[in-house]
Length: 386
Image (tube, rainbow, N blue to C red; front, top):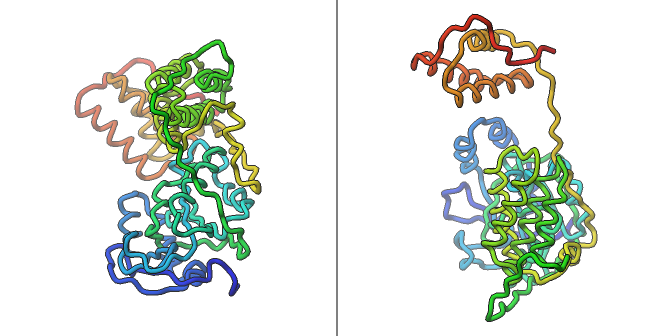
């Protein structure tokens, strides 16, 4: 492993507030289990705020080099490595996210893949050919992975990006990783803006985008909408379509689809996809040619999230008491009733957490205190018994 691209010296800081860097061997830092207990405690912590507080107490390294301070201008020597963050929160459209590590391992340019501190994402390291073009390497890989629906955290473009110590007993190592050579090429925008609206040409950019949404089937609508919005963003940045018209057309297309659970979420997906797509301008082309510049070693196709409904179970204990009160009393506020029904339903499909029971009690007590309930002669049928 002496020839491993990970066998390099980088800077390490005692915690998030530390300003005094110390040298550390990156390979040793990645393989140690010294912080196993701290990391496992963080992963079992319920709230994001508490997880963040605990995480900032861990040591953190700058895998892309040696620094005198934690900022890009203070780099002493680049390690020849680039960090990638792939967070679940940015990739909820990937239904098989838990298997993403083994798919990423097919990319010959990746030298390391491990779980993030929270356990909800992946941290990757890629050797790059031209360290002085760190950001352009990042943008090129960002574009290539986006073609497969994999969204990178853009903070990875920062050469001084900190990585907190983590623990993954099944981390992936490729000590013979191929050096990544692709460089993102900035396109010079045309002086005039070219706006293309839906036309008779089936290859018109806006037609391509809208037809993707129109053809989306149940179970794939969210992922397809995201891909269409991302493609629209590329066309917008390439001055092929107008952003306002693209947003309106996408919103109209998704509103026309059946079984869309939340238009608010759908509109947010459109905005997020366009924002990401605008980072990689593209010219008029069909959807497949937008994916032509991809890493040859990867053939990953994210699965759509399957909505499988578990059968309802009989409530027991305190949950049964709360359900009994709710069934025998009509709570007047429709919004509160919907929230309670949904929460009770969830608790009867999965093992209820103390927080969920506490939330149910809070909602019911709130209704009682506001005198919103009135006794009814017949209990309402809220759930089917299985």
